[in-house]
Amino acid sequence: MRRAAWALATTVVAVASTATSARAEPSAEPVVVLELRGDDGGALAAGRTRLVAELLAAGVAAEDAALSPPAGAASPSAPLAAAERAFGALDCVGASTEAKAAVLTLAAAQAGGADVTAPLSRAWTYIYLCADRGADVAERQRAARALRALGVTAGAEVGIPDATWATTPELDAAVDRDIIELPVRAGEAGDPPAQIWIDHVAVGVGPGPFYVPVGPHLVAAAVGERRGARWAVIDERTGAVEVALEAPPAPSPDQRAAAALATARRPGATAAERATAIDLALVALDRRVAIVLRSATLAEVWRRDGHDAARKHASAPPVAARLAQALAPADEPPLLVETDAERQRRYGRQPSTTRWWVYATLAGAIAAGATVLIVQAASDDVQRIRVTGP
Image 1 (cartoon, rainbow, N blue to C red):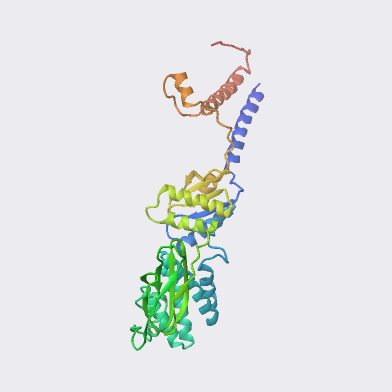
Image 2: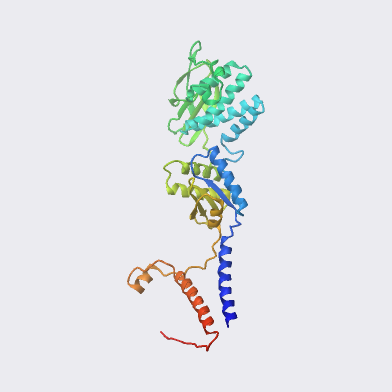
């Protein structure tokens, strides 16, 4: 009987140990790491890369979120990136062409009310530097004028050497140039008046007229969600400038998720904004599980099941070992719980919300231990069985 008791006790311990070790195994499901600690700067990106590597070493199929407008999308990101690559390869023809394509898209967005000052400044900087390399004084002066209209006061602000910037002093564009009356038409019959921007300056509503010096100009217009921009060379023979308006394309899932995450990273973002951003990111990346980095000491595990929105399932320090534990699947039985009304009828008061199986597990453990002790105590003596009714 002692052998039987020892076998029973060993079996109980082994089962408990097996269950514990099974739950410690990390999930093999792909897990995306999302950044909500603030603006995604270089230091944050480096730390996130290290964490992903440590998670992979811990057996978690982690991956860094890569949310950006896809190549070919109607966004200035693609031509701006192309301009940067061409400029780095000393291909100023290509860099200037791509930068001007980005300027058109961004100018239309600016007319529609978007804050695109930073990418516009980058695009015009490439145009300026390429004009400087090609000794195109007029083009360089136009780029300097555009940068000043965007708020740039010194070349160092946008990466232009001070000595080079000093060669393009601020000049009155109207000096020694004829001024032309310029009507601008945009939109269709019945539309409200279009908002008109010329050379990144809001000049009023169409059709004007507006007064500009002779020469090339960038004309942009917007009516509601529709917007457009074009280059126009203005002289005495120029009639009204027509600006074709188009509705912006619907954002891709990647773009929606990236925009939502940017909003969720801002100071003062609400819990609802964070939840929406995480859900959109999981949908865009076709993933069910995310590790969300909230601060230097806090990370969260979020899951998205079926068509349900993503929900937070656990919190842990942003340490690979702790996150691997938080991600481990929990093989728990389905819970059988009463409704609030059933509990009220049964007990006459609101009972404890502790699940029944918690008590059942404790009772089972106590019973198993008692059985082991009883069997062991009775192994040398007469066995007695007592049955007690309620």
